[in-house]
Length: 529
Image (cartoon, rainbow, N blue to C red; front, side):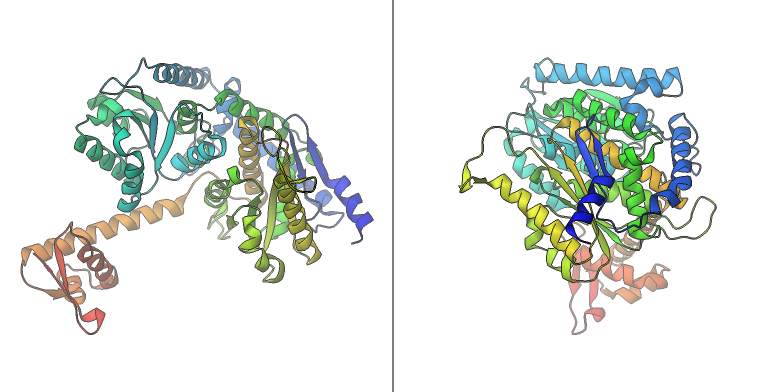
């Protein structure tokens, strides 16, 4: 396509959204001139499905739940007065609690002001808060945030080493809807151990964000924790960042949460429009549909040209892949849908994997994210009349052009400035695009049966470990092979899992299991001391 035709296509398909300071360009997705017209009936169905969802329809039929993350930034749209009151009261409580912490009216056990924040969660209870903290944090933050987002002992030690002697000034948020999620429970118990070791009472530094009446809620009540904030059944983990899950840590960090919510609300309002060509979330979903042939045929590469957006691709991985990666459609037909998401940041990506994107297998489409405003203040020149930000912009455009030149498709999202308002708008844009795309491919975006299956299998591994180690202790001093132990605990079909359990147990001092090595690793024996 010659330059003039490309310019005309750009003008035709550029969606300009001044109310949220955002532009969406899908012109370099190679759909034909009739694509949007052909898809119009389907996207109109998606608009109606979204309207029903926002009005309180049971949009997650598997779990018989409403899906209401949109109400979090527009409580007046909630389908009942009770839900509206809960939302409004929770945000008032967050503001009041934050003020009491920041002014030193709520203090640590030793009477000192809280200066550090430790957030414990997994998945949506960590990725959203981490993304907001990293994208909007400054050296002037009221509190410095840290995260335990896994059950990796070494990772937890690293965080506690960074907090060091400031644990007494650290407020701990434990975030889990049920309180039974293993990673979060383990993080909480490890944190409790660290506080106790430091001579501190954990409950006097702890806050729960959880479902009313959950295991965690009961622990917080019995332990005399400082405060509790709710999580609701109608908010899924991957869309919970605008609830107390993300808003409380952001407010405590010192981020202006009103602008975050306002940006999301204004994007929601804009993307409720049934005028497809002026609705950026609809256009984004349609571009995905074209790029993947509605079947997940290509991967989505997120390339934000802004350091503060580095974690955005990780956040979008969960939002998009957990929402769209489904075996069955809503009618029970096996479809194996989904879009794989990965990303880095510009211009680091040019020194990492743009080589493959341009010249390797053409199994992806790129989303470039451009931020026009470089920094507060004036930039020094690094070349004659050229700044570092000019180079960043040139690298973005250069990569975009180099990919297009080799028939590689891309989308470009441009925001004027990276701040709480634009972060809120970006989150809302992708949330709604996911909902629209799910309607286009007829799947339920709001459940996660694969995640639950993985949890159940993890539980079976824990049971195998308990059985295997119990057998070794009952036969203390004697050594056995993995195959013998598997037979002994009536799990002959699980010998591989038992072998890996024993390898892990013998590599750590916790279980006092010794490995007696053999020439062939599979002939090694294990004994309990």
